[in-house]
Length: 231
Image 1: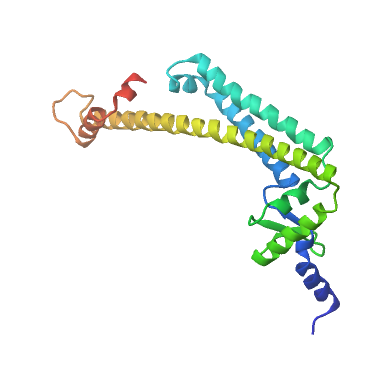
Image 2: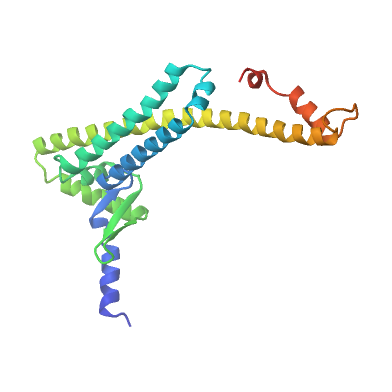
């Protein structure tokens, strides 16, 4: 036998589509993403400040490029913070989330559960109902209000995607530099370890006999790329 509370829970679950959100295209998700990008940029700046010489060396000793690279993260962090504040404090249409829920046909949708007081993912058919529900709410707007909503929502989306794209680009460049530098550091450590072992095996390189470590050291030096010698 289903009790009253269970009935409320099931009813709320079945009505989640009535308060839909497009996943990733709603104010909360956008603000959270902007915050995460800003924090990531701050962390990158901290990393660069702590090892700026490595960044300069990786960029072929060009200090101007290193400074510009660092400033890109600083500027992006500032822009994310400003946009985050604008979305939190400036005028935002109450139909912002509904707009993207209506136009996000076929996209992943969330629905609010009034019993659980939280958003949950919707299935295929529920998402279709959610799209229709959001569209109904937009249709209540006047033509002028709808045009205003489109301008604001697409403008906000364009700004957000622009910031996200810029971050992805410079983050990818940093990851490449990090990987490249990590490879060189690993190679240097390996050479140091083999050198110490070879030194022990050959009593300070005083004898002509070569042990395993010496042969390994000789091999890695022969196969090092030219770029490593330049570094």
